[in-house]
Image (cartoon, rainbow, N blue to C red):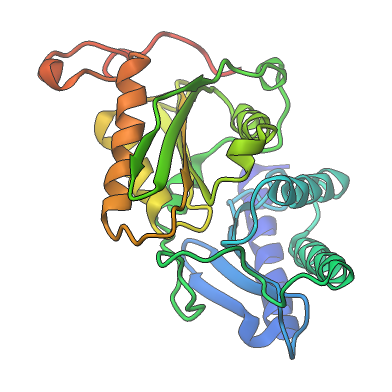
Length: 318
């Protein structure tokens, strides 16, 4: 099929799907940037008395649904660890089972099914009637505030998230940096070299196998992958409930011009408000481990045009 014809067909499919979703979900469906095809939907376990809710953020690539999946991010302060991995794997499986078809409705209902199952488990265990983990002062409780989509927009040139390659099968080596403590809150950075989004997910999954890391209040991460064939960057970030932290971390990676690397910062909340200092600790931890692993210059060498951040190895994307 001619590329122009295929793109036209994809666009028509997207328009029809968006109209259907808007009709089905009403006010829960939100258009963030129609020109850039950025949308979000609030999904709850119950329409009238919601107890567990998430916000699904979506970008539709030009070649969706014919040959690319939607780019997505799930926002919910309480959703982390094995639960986050489970729902993300479910969405990926749905895409692979329905390649070439419009799948947003299936994704939304799969997430709703997950929330209902979680509600049933909570009722059975007599858990508190709340859809959030132990809250910190930094968590954003206002659904009226639209999340910052600037980081997601950076991904519009990305490769297909669900493609397979030999590199995807390799778990990169993971490094752990020194922890920082401030008023009983602990911060620890982790780093891994990555060349595909699949490797990013593998590292995240591996980190969550560690009970201590999985129990962190937030696991904030950001990554940048250099696509040599297009001379562009594939990059994304995750707040994990620490509002705006992921975007700030990604901004740091951009400023340092690092590439082919994933940085995760775990935070264990100590019960005392840190205010803006929490962002300082997150970024300082990230910078320290990047320096430690040779991805950027030290403070004294910042003026020298050397280091991985300025002159990356010629490693081709697989």
